[in-house]
Image (cartoon, rainbow, N blue to C red; front, side, top):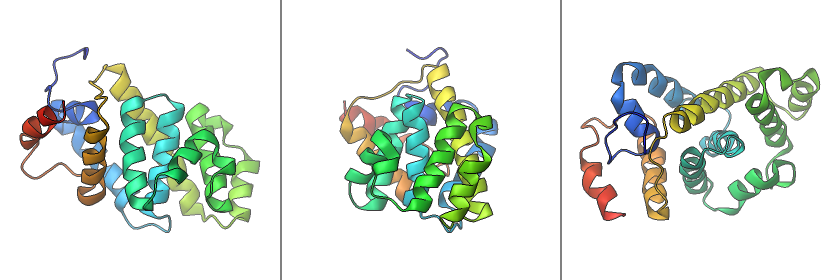
Length: 192
């Protein structure tokens, strides 16, 4: 049960962002820039960062939502699960392993991002911007995870909900739907 009154058809962060549209606007814009904007990291790689951090923060809503998005973008479901289990043995590039190591450090404590972690990423081919964006994505998802769980936002358990959410994330991105979210009242009730 959420700690504050939220629209019941808008679980997770969506309901929270709708609750405060004024504070949601810059959050959405930053997320759109980082996860869907121009980057040398693929959208799938950026979703892996979001998923790893959310998983380590034990935020079920964000982990499940971004796992669905990553799986869609990667075109398979094994890699994301392996990243969550142990990114060092996952089938991703050495550069991605190093960046995921940085993201994991940020999730624990920003000061855990050491010179050796940064050097490892650079030696594996990561650019300064990729390192910057990895840290910012990881920090942003720590905020989201704490936002969702701190206000006890509703977390659906139906896999079909997250599949639809993953599809929306990969097609629309992180912008607010132009017409709002009223159409989700029917969709989400049909998934229950």
